Image 1 (tube, rainbow over the protein chains, first blue to last red):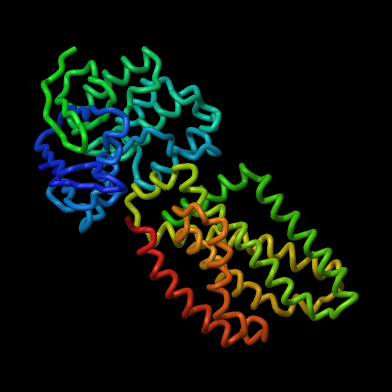
Image 2: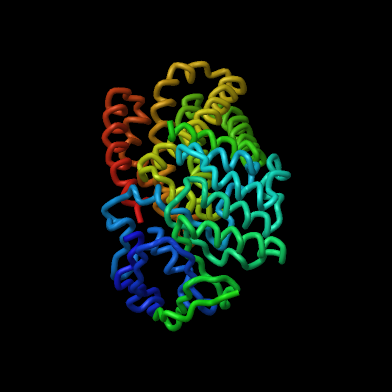
Length: 209
Length: 200
């Protein structure tokens, strides 16, 4: 089993997630659709281990992430916000993460070139626009060539051409990775769709382009 | 090796925001000048405790460059997702803080000697280094402890003061063996607690 989300509950003031369970045996493209504040980001952060669930557990490659810290080598995460160092250049940021993971995957290099980031190599991240930062954060999530890729609203805030290219890349990546992404609306991509409503996850239909 | 990459990254980020370091160095120079001037009208021995006070202020200032900055810029998420232990991240922050405190501390020492002519200060350089090392641990730990709190501007100096109290007597008496013993014991406790603070 690649990823198991077992009966996850999360409470802040109210219950954000109410017994969410999901499991994925194979690679593929999965969308989690929900309105703002529906708990998509919380579910993603719990899945990658950044937030502790109130109840429930996450297993990556069959192992509970609380007991096995090595799981971080198998996941790549992109958040809605920029998590790169604004004071460093694009190259310095990617070099830093490559050194920390001990590798720079061919996938990341390929995506970096396809998304047109090469021209910003020596530009400080702080000087880039929101859309370029977003593309760069996507590349960062692929540096370690992870088996599971978690993306928080990867297509929002991008121009049309970038959205088309990124959608294409997501479909290609899903051939040998489990790619889970969140979206506020139904994506125009062929993928399994789950909807998150009032903290409860429902399986929806397969969406075709 | 990974600790080194983390420290280099922090130093690089800090040098690109040099206006903050310059503000801190300005504070060190102005304080040294005022303390030296005041010591001519009071007692010259006042310079030593004043130096500890300046270093404590530097530590408070530097604590805002540690974990709190990572959480403000959301880069802490990136750090937490790296395949390294929380202790590795903590140690890197301690060394980074130590480098900043020692550089500014040395500026303070030399400025005090220059402005006051009190060369005795150079004889306590070991005590200065030990205190700087300890306060770096305290500064990084305080920053980690309160990074999620809205009241961290108030809490950080309070915590730094509380953690400094146990070594205060040995520091003021300039009792090197006792200071080493207390600093080692307290640092071990703080470093072992740090992983609990930083783990999810």
